[in-house]
Length: 224
Image (tube, rainbow, N blue to C red; front, side, top):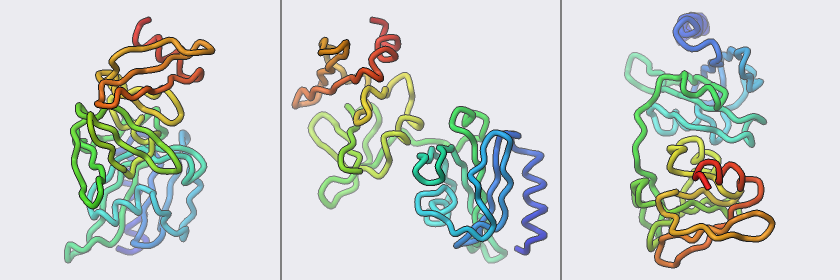
């Protein structure tokens, strides 16, 4: 696909997507065209290499549609993206197109069906776990862990990405290092400095702190 065809594709897409969306087109190694919006600008320049962890890069690696939240470490601001591969006449992936939205406007994007499973690594096995079986997530030393009744798995998502992707009425951030499934809370104990301690229903009866930063919103959500 030549540059003129790319430009025509951008113009066509601009009439179809929400005006808050920025649009990026890439080949297999770098961005080719970029159109920011009034709501978000990642300051991408044509010729910039694709960054590991970006929607565009993941779309090319997986050769499939990708949709998720991207933390601010990558471009300086958080964004929610929807990427889809571009194919040539021989059905080979030659690039990707990415729609980029502020996280609070993500509901305006067309949605890719989301599975209710999260895959975790346990020893050398990869295990899909249904959301209902997840007690909580934790983060330590730049690694995210998924905890079920009896097992702990490593996962690739960050807590921030999980917080945006999972149902907000079910999974709640209570601490910078913890995201909990409300249905797995056994009881809530008072702690010092107007905070709380959650006792979970997992086999170990794990205790999860609710930090002062999250205490007020946590109480409001659960009505106590």
